[in-house]
Image 1 (tube, rainbow over the protein chains, first blue to last red):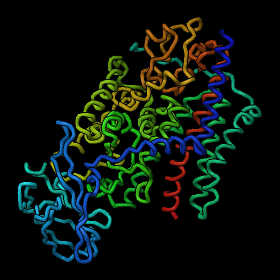
Image 2 (spheres, rainbow over the protein chains, first blue to last red; image 1 turned 180 degrees about the vertical axis):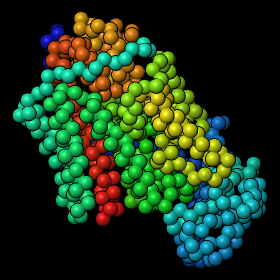
Image 3 (cartoon, one colour; image 1 turned 45 degrees about the vertical axis):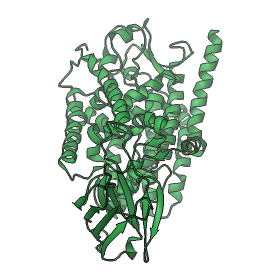
Image 4 (spheres, rainbow over the protein chains, first blue to last red; image 1 turned 90 degrees about the horizontal axis):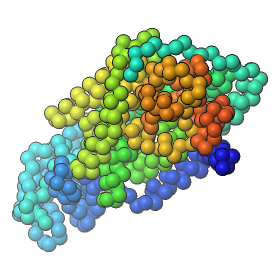
Length: 167
Length: 388
């Protein structure tokens, strides 16, 4: 029994050395693919959630994401909906438009913001609710994940906190 | 912990040069293979950096083999890694976005490099919500090669090969403390209550539960000392200013001042939740360190030498280390009675400790060459390129 345990011990030690040699060529790739295959996604607080509809405008479009709600009582975000105006290069210098979030034919909010040509310039957004679905925003920049306006790649992203009539 | 001065480092009989060279040959070939791509890249800086790193790593391994000492040479590598990593990382951040702070738009774009420290926090939320509570990318992108899948893949491989040894051969953060702790000749604070080593477990439990409750990486947002030298959320509010203040205070206290005063890796030993998490894998790791009771004179040199306090009176009496042993080899190097020995689980204790040490080193140094070596070479390339 002692000899068998020794043989198994040395075998495992040799396999550990072999695993090191296989790490850059096989093992790391294997584990990486395994993680990717789990179908995990980044939490919607960061990504804004799935795009549920697109509204075509003259030369650009507005993407409406699925509303994001806190999943636990201690999650420190308010419910919000993300809207992407894309491509930012095609936007007029001043955007002021109504957006229908759920496609029921009635606008839910009016968003107003400037689009400076300097991509590093800070953005500010005003959102006027046109119903109970969203909360108003006044000159908001990027203070929190649920109320913000930022440039992300080719899009101007606006997150609007949802009101009590959102669900 | 007993306040007894460590005994002089034992000087075991060195190995012959020829035999040492022969035993170093596999590591030299491995290092050559690892750096062969860099050596083929056009540009002098990248080639010189690769050659310097290769020579450094192979020389250190040769010295480990020749002197039969592990920790003093490992520590040199590890401190180098610890000091070069933040330089290279911050250099890259400044080049990419001109600042160490990560703005909200980069988080939304998934451009935050994934850090292994987040792993314990994302597991439960991932299991329950099938989402990762980190503003990174699952797969590598042009703007974020340090994706979640790649970094978790690397961690899994590292855990398989090193177990808790990650903290002694892989974790660049630990290298900073190791370097600071090595600087003073004597520890100013020598009596440390052993109960402090329970704190990382408490921090681990707290951050795992809080991350699940808030669906946010709590440790990264509030407690990580290494935000000070890597990246942190843009300071735009009182809350983010408080967070930045906590990062800086913890870094100065746990990574600079206390390691200097105690000659211990205080952040690792008394705070790091990832270290505690990684300790769990010691149970399945094949290498460990044992104390031969028939040789031990209870001089407590091993306990005093351990940078993470992974030995106490009771564990020594039982002939083993505590679960948080990171296999640095400090206790084995300092034991002048050869009571502390490297060991392969399943084999008789003390039967062939040098064989166990070498097998452990081939695995650990192979990983260190691949992972740490690439970080060292990358930073050296940037520095040499900057110098022209």
